[in-house]
Image (tube, rainbow, N blue to C red; front, side, top):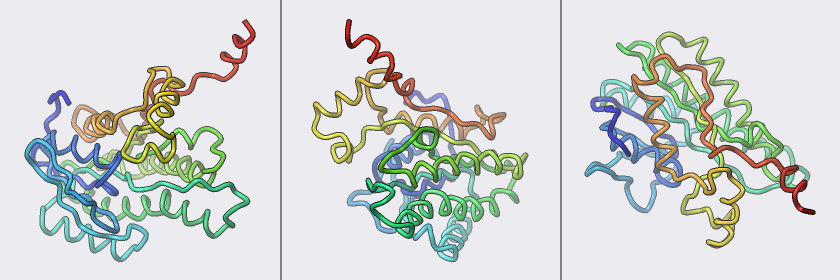
Length: 258
């Protein structure tokens, strides 16, 4: 990462920041100089570190309102402030709508929409009273703006998350800025579970205009930007981090017979 942004002295929380995209975000914030606290229900096998510094981990169930309140009280008490929140935790198994029942799909919505709301409310209570306010970044998905067969509840939750961020940006201005990173496909240590072996990952990458999947560090760079003063007039925005999106299927269909 090019060190054009300095977050030294800032305190950041990254939910689900111990692996995959979350670990990439955590490393980017560490490289920019921030003190980073990650949280999840259970720790990763190895601490997340970068630039000779290591993120702190605290366990918390983000769906438990009381546990979330206690978590942020601890962060505020020990660090004295909270400048950045990245709502990254989320995900879904592949499940068609008629295969799980409403209760299972509801749990996906709870994790990907209601938990970020709970976390953001707790973070806002600290950010609103401190000099300089704060910045909240939601990690959204292109699944929220297109059909998502096999992950419909996840897509619906991500659509709701983006709308929630825009409403927060209006209600909580000018103290707290709220934005969304809308991610496409990102290459992580779990990519093989979704896309198969290396040849499968490369084939999927060729469907993206930039010719590859994103690296978690690139998502991290975008988070650092939105968290920084360089984005001081950006709030309620949705920044697409998807390599140009998806090539329209009709283009390939139109040339298939030529």
